[in-house]
Image 1 (spheres, protein in one colour):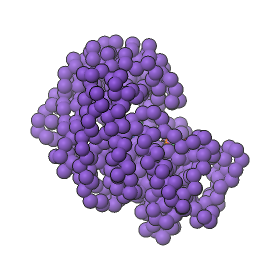
Image 2: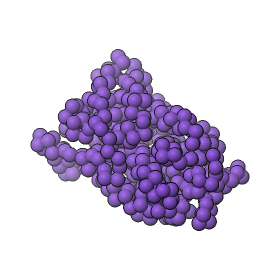
Image 3: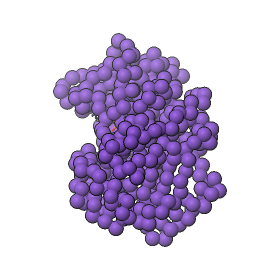
Length: 408
Ligand SMILES: Cc1cc2nc3c(=O)[nH]c(=O)nc-3n(C[C@H](O)[C@H](O)[C@H](O)COP(=O)(O)OP(=O)(O)OC[C@H]3O[C@@H](n4cnc5c(N)ncnc54)[C@H](O)[C@@H]3O)c2cc1C
């Protein structure tokens, strides 16, 4: 592989590996540089909207993703103070017919492994770990990076897929640290056998509380359960992937209904994240360097779309590079133009959905009433998010999967 025409992808998470795969499908060689000693995702679930299933189809990953996914039958919102159901939506044939694709959930490790295995099969992709990029230079005709261990890599262009704390973004945008939201997430995964029988339901359940919420859903074809708990706290400034403090968690949920408190007791070891995002920008490409995924547009998790957006970026970017005849500067500008309003909308709406999930007082009453009214009228339409996008390739209807059966 000639270094002259290869693209360097900094970061080998969902975004970096998807970008490498999408570019390789267009015949473009890619060198992936990942700082960690191995390509690895954290032990937690990730939700997959119909929009990302279209990207799986483009990248030839549908069958393998289907193998590892759980396909919930519905999405139910409950009030975590009264335990009442606010809205119970089906994810059924009607949902599938509307978006021409399913809604799934998957263990992050399974998702990353599917993409990684596809990358390993390509002779256009070079994968390197323990390569923390510390400096980047674009001299107008090529990009050179240096890693912490002193190695140098050269490429025709570079994609910063290095996440929320992106080094590449600091170089080309330079807008400092992400915005700390004051929202903290605790996550855990349990074998289904350890999950209370009463809540072994093949659906996603969101318990909305004042300044808190809890979500659970089955994972890995029903063998596991994923639990995410979020509350407001100004105790933490930054950092992620550390062990959480169960005592703090239980105190935050002390006033919630009995089922919520019981579910929290099921977990002994929690991992904790300080949730951050950034205001949307439209200048994430400069010369032969661009950004993708969380490096370009980090968002809060309330729409469950950060990873989905990274995969959409990857497909769009590869198409633009191909369309430009490998004129990277031009392609990076067009890609940014085509993507920034879509990703900005998701960044902004994720914040709005956070307000809705965590509403207090009158706003909580209003949320419960509006959601109930809208569901009766059939007015909840997520086409803006889950529907086809002009900048992304059209695909045929993706098969309707069998709903997941739980292991009892
Ligand atoms: C609580 C929570 C729940 C979420 N739920 C969902 C969901 O349900 N659905 C969804 O789509 N998204 C979800 N997300 C968002 C999703 O996790 C992210 O948007 C996604 O991981 C972004 O992928 P990425 O590849 O851009 O960045 P990352 O996953 O952060 O990957 C960046 C990679 O770059 C590497 N790296 C960093 N710096 C360097 C460097 N200098 N040199 C080399 N390598 C480097 C890192 O080690 C890492 O492997 C959630 C996020 C959170 C916090």
